[in-house]
Image 1 (cartoon, rainbow, N blue to C red):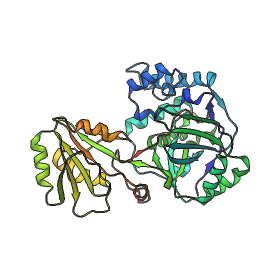
Image 2: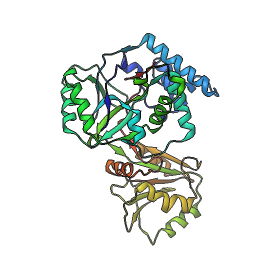
Image 3: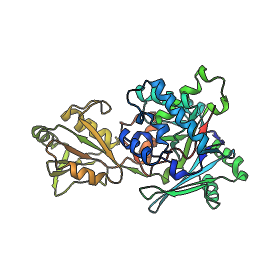
Image 4: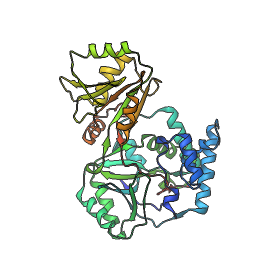
Length: 394
């Protein structure tokens, strides 16, 4: 049983002026430029470091609260208590999700399943943000095994008048709808029939919500609201995962020669004329100094490709033990990744390692087994915008 709780979201009057990309895929400079062009961009709330460098964590949180209060006064209005729908249409691909709040108790009990552990530094930052703003401002992307009853309700909701509809700079159409009140009890019942849901993206926001919910500092606030966090829930067959590729910097020719020689026994290695992005499991692309190779594992196992790449290549040949902290490694995901990687592959000191996309079934299997996926295993696209639905609990 999973609790789907309706809520009264705060939503912008001018969504296209407020909606912003997730804070963790935007650099400080990109955020600063966006806020200069769009003063009401939600990045001012989600990434307050764009205003002043070297703030204390407490001052950082206060600035986030200040920016959110400004939007409450000028842009954000409280909507009717209920369930909502967030639909994204990306050049023919459509995904339709339930916007609701979800139980911290379900998260702590493992009914809301995770596939990665949080990092302490990022966790402290998100805890401060939730605590200071007294709101859940970034929707957590979640998924579930398809439930046709819920899908029909959401489809019915999208036949009504849209609360917002706009295209972003990538041509993705973002739309919001209210679920008709006649369906509210049915949505709650469907939640009670779902044994588990899965966090696809947003582990730090979920952990922060749980920490704040249990904090005695917030005991004076609405416990019912504080004990639930904002999420958008999509059926697993509607989500798209793109590959997340690896980049190694400061690489010497002898390292690449040792790698190609050492992998001969466990991989079939083929030279190809251009950068290769794999379309099957157990296959990787390697590009260096304008030379391109396909590495195909002779015996494919059940392990995730990104885990295989870590075990077979990154650690033994480049001594990368922790991809979170090693400064030699970088990551590129998204639709424009191949073009960006092709440019990098011509450099003298960069190795480009391309991967096949992780499947939703693999993510769910790891979560079901209480396992942990390597960092940067999944790139979900299209991205949910922040600032369209705010869950306030003060």
